[in-house]
Length: 132
Image (cartoon, rainbow, N blue to C red; front, side):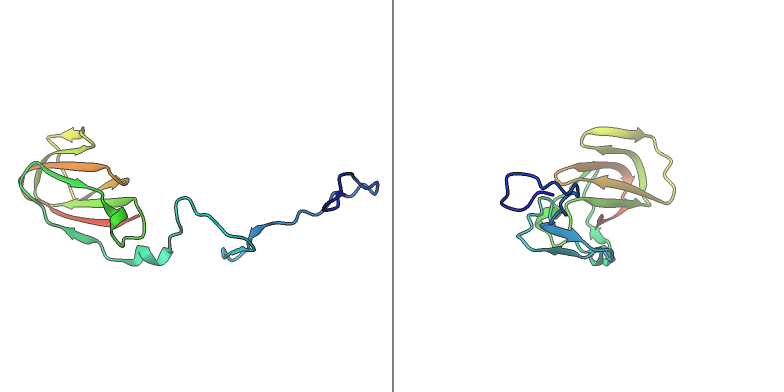
């Protein structure tokens, strides 16, 4: 066992109990006895209860960039939902996911902060976004 402030080991052969600076209890709560630095931030699961936000679709080809960090979305990553319309191509960051798509239902596009999607269409689709 190593004693705090002691440079040697005792001879009893029992490892010293670790003294955690912080701990995560079984309910998922975070408890800390020191300052906690959250590099990517903390997010509340309650934020995911927000309704998707409508996107005003402009002329084709329409670009949408994830700028969620400057909004109150609670996270930097978002989903973009595309429904309806007549879509001929969907790109993410300039790379085509496919052309001449036969879309059915709702298409979901994940975007990290700063990423963009381009929707090329002849009949305008409905678009919404939501934080992940």
